[in-house]
Image (tube, rainbow, N blue to C red; front, side):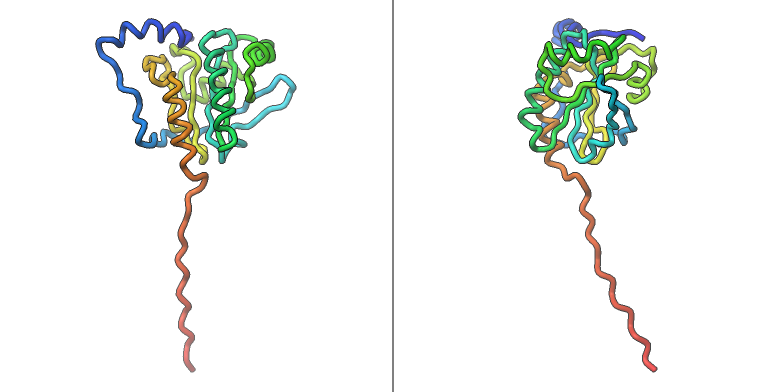
Length: 201
């Protein structure tokens, strides 16, 4: 399992991407459904647990973080601001810390960086299983998964974090605003059944 903090990757990527810049993901088209989100259990330091499926009906940003990663710390601060702005409309970020002994550092992480939304913890094995990735695969943190109101995964950061556009606030805002516009349920139009003719005697 090889880890790189996204902050370091982004810093190095400035030069690497200068010759072949990547376009930022479209701001006009809704992102496609990648797959149905599997269940995921987030544990909290007070002993309770939360099922990811309990957030169905909201637009969810699931952040897989390391409490010791400076970029994760900053990202969670930005998502706190986004939550304050978009939370009343149905946006819900959640952090799942999965660094070594994350359960011991979550409370300090929340306090030191004034995180204003739920922060729990998980294990690397559980996080990689949810992301459908090999535990030995190289990855960056944070890993951010975007889930729509129906529980579908609509976007996720590349495992190696080699596309910096996924880590910009403009992309995050675009995802929130785009997914909030979508209905929580699909409207089904029912056609009234025609009455059956009554047999004549």
